[in-house]
Length: 203
Picture 1: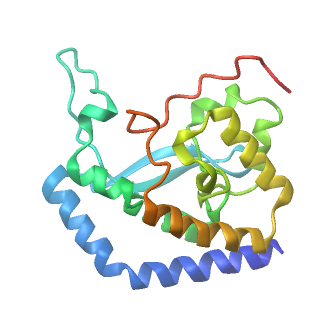
Picture 2: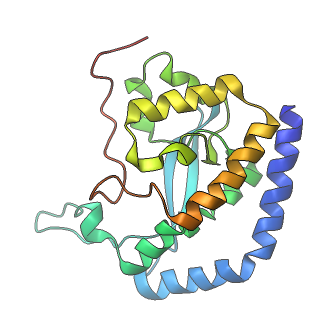
Picture 3: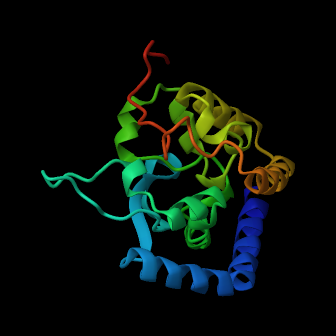
């Protein structure tokens, strides 16, 4: 069944990139003219079995710093263009390249920061038993408006209940969520607050 998942990932990713190529070119031009270089934001993320890879996204923030040379908050660095890219999830389209390379899947737990590795409980770490995805069970059930604990529980549920039919269901539900722009921000934050670990420990 995993072979079928890989074939689905490759075929849909390639077709999507071809169909949306004009959009990708337009967005690249807009990002370059409005935000400057680089066009893409790359960052180390954790993949299947804890493997580290470079995740690609369209850049959505400027690199403004305060007087001490520290980057300003995400909210202050976010641009109008960046907000549009994020609310429509267009900023995540370059991740299709990660899917083609085999670092990610179309569906799976979202790839998170490397520093989170030591903060998971044993059960939460199970989210790394599968490839991370562009979208996932947690994304269609709250995205950034649910707690980290709830998100990880949904990720593990996906790992334990995975099937091709479930992936197809998640893909279709993702289109609906993106269209409605639901669950994008957590309160006033541009991105989800940092995961600092489990308050009550856990296995």
